[in-house]
Image (spheres, rainbow, N blue to C red):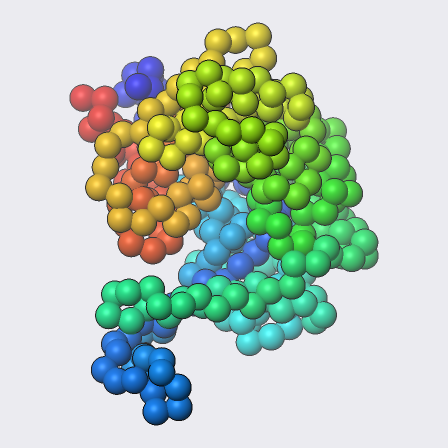
Length: 331
């Protein structure tokens, strides 16, 4: 349980507003086609989906940025989109949500990473991915660094959001961390398998169970496995804090020289876990920027992740919803 007074909680909530946070990583567009199946195609033995609703959402690192925005912060997103129709839709969404595009680079040689989901009769039928996962060029890396350098002095924190789609190269990771540390910024990381160990000397390193198992070559089943994995993360990444997310088992928090702490998951009716990790890293980062102690920030992040799991589809956490729910929990 979070150990703060209502007065301190209100103060923390107010401090969320206006925090400027960079989100660097793989930007995505999520497209949804919803409809009904009433017949089989005469061309092949496949269902014909008669679409009655088509809509778009932010995905990947852009969903992290959107969560920062709905939590009262000001996100500046750094990444790549293509010079294509999906890129046009992406920029239109940015304008609708009043999120700046000044850190976004258009690369005509790459498509906008897009995941299209076809849902028929409330059943997810197929997902179609459009992407180029090759590493971005050195020239594009330099563009990102130069754009970040212009804003670094005004930022409160930097989030590195890796989906292994090519933006987070080893050299870009190292340069971003070096720049952020030079300006004494909070640096949080949501890693994937590639370049897992490149995120050295950051503030918070937040892998999930599977990512940690794959990177460390171990299996995490028992409590002692969790503890051992957390200590290895602290040693190998040399981070200030390691957060190991464990799904229904909550989050294990590790800090050098201090006992392991656990933040349990609060029992909820889970509808969809999509996007929960994005919500966790967003809430954690803005809470730390607002002055929260690491355990309280982790508690809020875990709570926020649980709230969005009650919704169908990828939805962001809202500032008022989060603090209203936590206030009720404290009573």
